Length: 430
Image (cartoon, rainbow, N blue to C red):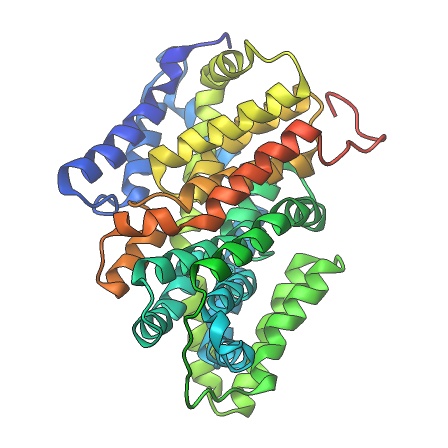
């Protein structure tokens, strides 16, 4: 199939439905995204009258049922179960209280950033981290006479740390699976890029809050409640199969919950089910988007986008900046970094293969720049959650979203200096 710009109409339909409803209602989450994608997929199937509907449905199902997509869906469900079971047995509360108990009173805001980084890395969800920490942030801001917008911006920034790095983050899983990368390889590349951003953020927050201090009482915690998070982080880092890590993490968190009285057998099973159910929407989104993209690809839309995106590219660095630009624009349009990666991933993979960009690097670029934009969007779920809990405008948080800005800068520097150096075994077209 030749390059065909008209094949991109389903994408346009999705953006019109999603963004249009957000502009009209003032809430980008009024129109269910899964309905918008379903309508767009229907438009894709209705196009190209030269092919029978049966043929187009077969193409759709081939894309939707691709092994990478199914693998991603299973990981989503297991990650949701682990996160919910660990949270329900007190892992988040114990982790937060432990961290707050050791943070010096004059470094509370720096401490809340570090806590948000660890919680998001452990839970794999930025919004979940914000919901857990924002009420504590409200207390810190009033007790230490700090700007509540500054504290909320700090929590949003820390939440994006894990969204960008966690082994069980839907964003990270999507980036890795669409690019065919190994999770631990992508983590190592990403971590060394964003570590300077995290350190500089701590320094800036320290200067901004000089002289502020506060104390918390009744910071009770239990070490055993934190073990499931530590287990998952360590064994994922050493390269254990992600399925095994998540299953063992669920079992370990469940056992701890049974021992500390958080669960009975039936309530534990219910919690596992709730965690899995919480990931159903993103799982079905992945399936529907993959099917729609396969039809668009068959109709020539992906080839057109590829030619458009690469016509001025003359080097590997240019290709990497092209991927960064594509994911940034898509995230601005969708206000959801996971959906943005699902949409942009196949195109990024084609560019990466053509210009010899390793999967670990293309996955890193997708994840990093989508999190940069997501961490700065006043109409994104992260800002809306923080603003709602704090009772302030999402716009007021933007100037204090320091970490997302810095990871974007670090990502640009990494591309300019050619980090990481390609492995000798990787060749163009591989």
